[in-house]
Length: 330
Ligand SMILES: NC(=O)c1ccc[n+]([C@@H]2O[C@H](COP(=O)([O-])OP(=O)(O)OC[C@H]3O[C@@H](n4cnc5c(N)ncnc54)[C@H](O)[C@@H]3O)[C@@H](O)[C@H]2O)c1
Ligand SMILES: O=C(O)CC[C@H](O)C(=O)O
Image 1 (cartoon, rainbow, N blue to C red):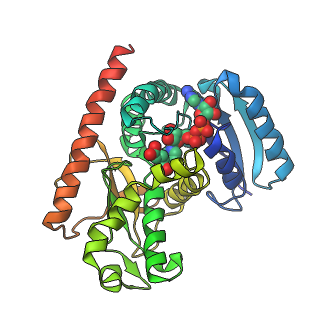
Image 2 (image 1 turned 120 degrees about the vertical axis):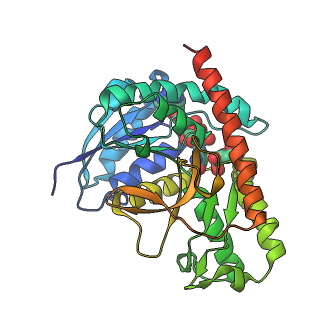
């Protein structure tokens, strides 16, 4: 076995953390032959709970787990790490607005950006899960200027998984047959789940579904509102599916995308497809040797263009609000 890679999970005592640390420890992300050193961060009042999580990790007897570091100190948690899952943040509860969440959470990502800048490897790959994920990833990157901005990403893989699962259910096929559903823009109610270029067992999803009104209507709304529907049902934010998606995202980033497949990731926008630049916009990407590239040249019709504009506008507004919160906090 190679030497362990250092993987940090923040919010490790929380709901998503509980599923995520097991999945990482089981080898599902970095490979069954890759040993990991788990760096688990949470806030001081959660240390007893985190201690219980550590006990359970030990009791899982996972061959990949070589070391567990549990701490409330970001300088310890981020020391020389290769990969970070930034989950630690407040989830939205029923009745809470997105703006309330932004004000509460964005400051965490400023502080963690600064800590990553000082303590992590410059090659660290950072996945932001905590909401508002795209804008938190932007702020984190902004406060970590010594780390390339390409090393920061936001999670929209849960939305992609949700979209692919809905298409599979509609067509009564295994979800593994459905590929290349795209999530454009923000991980929010303005995201654009797009199946124009998706395939089912190699054929066009659009043709197989053969119902444009559904694809442009109920399907989009269902995916956009799925997180809220889970909160309404569970009285808690999605956790198992979020942890699975975080693993899928990091596994794609680490291991690359298969030929002909792409995945959706919130990444620093260069203005591709006429989108807002300077925000973390979710695009279809391919990944090779640890580097993502935005898939270029997909035809975009007027309907899609309108959707890209709406979600891009929201991301610009969130960025401006977040920067105001961060400068007020100085
Ligand atoms: N991007 C997505 O698709 C997606 C999906 C689901 C949930 N989320 C978001 O993930 C976040 C976590 O959700 P959860 O259900 O696990 O919440 P949770 O409340 O169960 O757990 C969050 C954990 O983060 C910890 N925490 C808070 N501030 C911290 C800090 N500064 N440093 C380290 N840890 C800190 C808390 O103590 C808690 O243990 C929320 O913001 C939620 O909205 C995102
Ligand atoms: O707060 C929300 O509405 C969504 C929570 C989470 O990001 C999800 O998608 O399940």
